[in-house]
Image 1 (tube, helix red, strand yellow):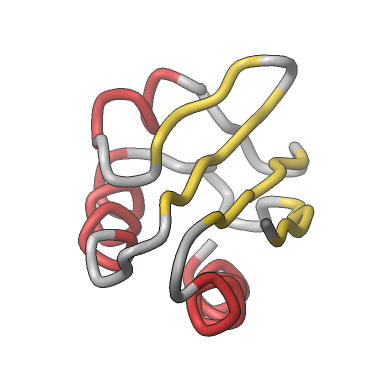
Image 2 (image 1 turned 135 degrees about the horizontal axis):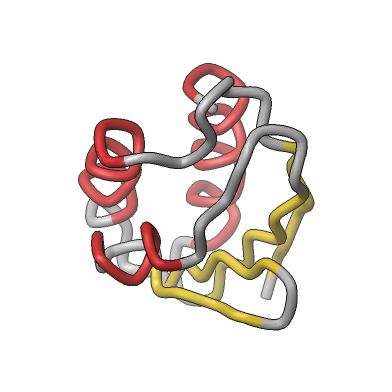
Length: 85
């Protein structure tokens, strides 16, 4: 299992458009990708679950990746967050 923390820099947080792109990105991997904030967590492949976390600009999320391709997935998802969120 691998994980990293990320402070969201997008002015409006993880809203519909970036959440949709994140879900599409997460579905590329065999590993289970989970996003957690304030004790709540959501599977990154489920759009409504990701949006229900209500992540705003400046808040920190923890992203956990677990599975067969976790090494590749954690690096690429981290890069995705840095470029898009």
